[in-house]
Image 1 (cartoon, rainbow, N blue to C red):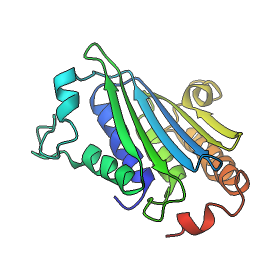
Image 2 (spheres, rainbow, N blue to C red):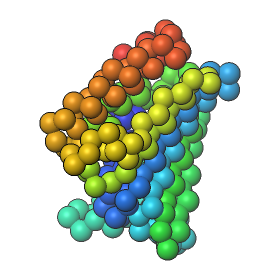
Image 3 (cartoon, rainbow, N blue to C red):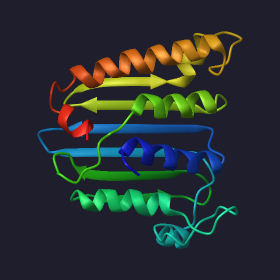
Image 4 (tube, rainbow, N blue to C red):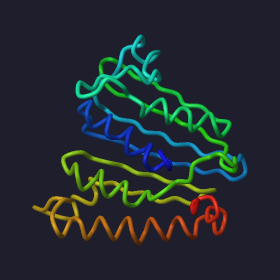
Length: 193
């Protein structure tokens, strides 16, 4: 995994596989605390306590098409490499929350990557799922709620031509503008790795 947006993609794909209908992704950047937090929550099939204890082992997976599950173990390693850690909370009755903490300025912290393309892929590829994406930087905030976007497209899917145009505008214009103005200059060197 070369960037954090690919870790987000991998975790959310796990949520989709677990049958989630609602997925929330929160990215929080706090320069004062030198902290980057990524939280991914879902309402899919949860894990019991015993499996949560094992899930960071790369040789444990629930997938049947392969015997290894590197995604969460690599995400945890990325967090550890930058003075952070990864927490998993899950309930067998439903719902999982993954929280990854990173020292924002750490030289080994992976760049954020192309969040717009990651979100476009997830939302357009899964129009039946409601996604909420929130990103804050030192008090400024960007939010995208796919349910609200769907309401702006009566009788159309976010996977339709009109839906894709609306989604692209929100992500490629509004998210990019937020990322480039919310914390001017601070992210440029890191995210161009």
